[in-house]
Amino acid sequence: MARKKKLKICLATAEFAPLAKTGGLADVSAALSVYLHGAGHDIRVVMPFYSTLNRGELKFEPVDNFQNLTVTLGPWDVEYSIYRTVLPRSGLPIYLLRCPALYDRDGLYTSGKDEHLRFLLLSRAAIEMCQHMQFSPDIFHCHDWHAATIPLYLKTNYAWDKLFADTRSVLTIHNIGYQGKFPAEILADMTLGPNVGHLHQDDLSSGIINFLKTGLLHADLLTTVSPTYAREIQGAEYGMGVDDILRARSDALIGILNGVDDAEWDPQTDQLIPRKFSMQNLSGKKICKRDLLKELGLDGNLNRPVIAVISRFVSQKGFDLMEKVLPRLLTQRDFSLAVLGSGDPQLEAFFDSLRRQLPSRVGFYRGFNNKLAHWIEAGADMFLMPSRYEPCGLNQMYSLKYGTVPIVRETGGLADSVQQINPSTRSGTGVLFRDYDEAGIDWAINTALDLYKDRPLWQEIIQNGMAMDFSWQQQGEQYVNIFRKLSGK
Ligand code: ADP
Image (tube, rainbow, N blue to C red):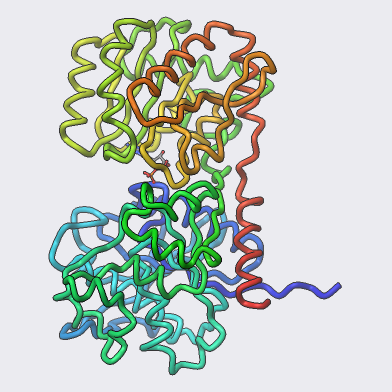
């Protein structure tokens, strides 16, 4: 049998854990890249060198000959330099675009007038970095709207370069709710020249340029992060205004469920939790719960179930349902809440007020805290994720691995990763509700609290979840297979 050729991949992303993260995009970019690198493929990750980068112990070296480069974005000559770092555990190299004028900001994303320039630079510089390195990728793997103009540029402005003659582009949609929509005044900055005709013309006439849509039209292959979400976004309810394009391209759209990075999320090896534990020996989980209650200043009754929420506070995540039912349920039922997150100030105020009303049963940490996220996953009994839509969702998978039973809405990746508990067959891993309404979430939380009382059953449910395999070994190979098919290698 012939040995399969290794692939050459350039992966462009706005987030990469732990360097720069606001959500699942960072986890997936990192875990997939590490997997592909470990499998022997030549993968070059390109991302912005944000001033807020979480540098840890990493060293960032300027790459020789790739300093003070220029990309022309319309009237702007944008100067940048390429830096390189290598992840210690995996040896994966990452290339970072240092451009203080665009990336020295308070956060990863801004609502500034030059936001489009920040990600046009990412896209154009990723392509030009390949040129500088004479690296001819089989696959250009573009993530979300930030890198979604790359497929168009490869087909137009850079089509002259033989380096890309066999390059195929893949656009992965992590969340179709974020599209990178800009006023048509930015057209000149795209530097498309006569290639403007490749933009969505109706949008253009109505004064809009939509980066994600541009990628949906021009990428050779589209993927998204769960099979159910791949189906859902082809309909008007979940398609966020681009469902018509996705339906037209349905043959080129594939859903691959995200994996979990075992090096980061495994209760048997996790350095961030008070006590490690496994499916065979859950005693450490009890200690995690005890310490979590203490950390959050909650009453230490270990028999009272703890329901956890870890999330960006945005409407996608189903907070309006939580607002409707949690105050009432907290008076009707005996459980505690452990909430970690930030975002919408109104939602922050909601959890703050719950905490003030019931300080012994409601813990709320406002902000982003990775260690506490691990701790909560380990110490809680249930994880609530009533999302309005959820492309994949990672926390429900972390929860399953950490013996924390998910209570989720049956949508997107939640539907693909959690199985309904059936007490009579002692099967299933969590509680799912279908309709996005008060009755749905109310039923789901009450059901989980009732099931919790049957402790032998609950233990089996926990173990069903912990036995599931969400490793990147499986999911990563699916990407390799589609990359091979697409590139003919
Ligand atoms: P999304 O990408 O829509 O935010 P996911 O469930 O796919 O949702 O991924 C969220 C990721 O961000 C998970 O790794 C989760 O643990 C992490 N996360 C979200 N909010 C916080 C927070 N406040 N502190 C720490 N980690 C968080």
